[in-house]
Image (tube, rainbow, N blue to C red; front, top):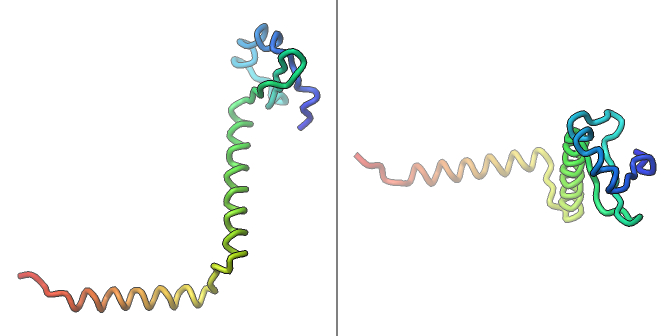
Length: 102
């Protein structure tokens, strides 16, 4: 995405706000709004915003996965199933030792 072609002064936003919201241009997903020559805000169509949010979510998941791998908090599939089997058996044993109500 080339932001250099999407930099607009705030006066442009004021003059064209209705058109920008009513009929966004398909190639104009993001507009950088300037005030006194400095970038101050970003205007995005909803599709671009949603794509950005989904990308950020995936990046957070990836980062979390990498942190887990670095901390060696990973089990093999066999170890995970063995651990689950032990927990299920322990749960069943605890339930069978509880007195039943009549």
